[in-house]
Length: 153
Image (tube, rainbow, N blue to C red):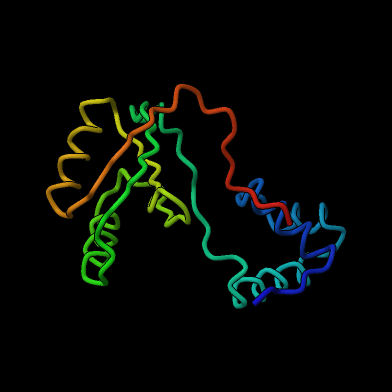
């Protein structure tokens, strides 16, 4: 279900995405409103599920997680039990930042952050030790050109 947003809602959401640590006064000023109506709109957007959570973005390089792999997975297994085991395995692995089920020749793509190639191999060995996978292709990102969590609202 798509939520109907007006210009003020969009400005509030843009500001929260840009920097959620801003004061309510700052957000209200930038949205062209006052504090109480902005607070009420934020509460409403949370209640509607538009705002899912507040979080902090960390710098992976500063934490030593310098290797980003995109992992393409093809499987010959399509039963519900296999899929549940696969999804549970992904949920348990903190290295997996994103996982998507795809249409086409590749069944899944994962975004995996690790320290180095050896750490990726440990992840890979753990993954194939838990679930049967037909084919895995790992692509090392040489340079991150764009990365954002901000949605165009």
